[in-house]
Image (cartoon, rainbow, N blue to C red):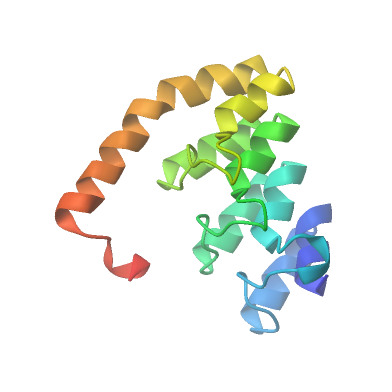
Length: 145
């Protein structure tokens, strides 16, 4: 686990910002000791919305998955972190991808009883599909290439 992973997990905004400014660690660095979680996975799991924001603004890819196919949205859904899910959705991050076992974040939220997350994810489902359709027809935005 890198210093960036640790700072993201505990919500140390200043340290995360400093590490990113100095290019000490890639925001997409996977932690091989923790199932290939990125700092973004840790921040999402802990509900660190501002850390999620700064990581994405500095190049963190919200579509990266862990060994079992979890995205940051899966972790936010498991922990009941609705503000993180809202932010991920606002930047068109994948909040409805299936993991290796066919589970989407909405199912994870249901399992853990986070009804507010379930309701949000179910409402957002149509917008997610529409975004994928647009990307398919027009191609990805330049920063995704």
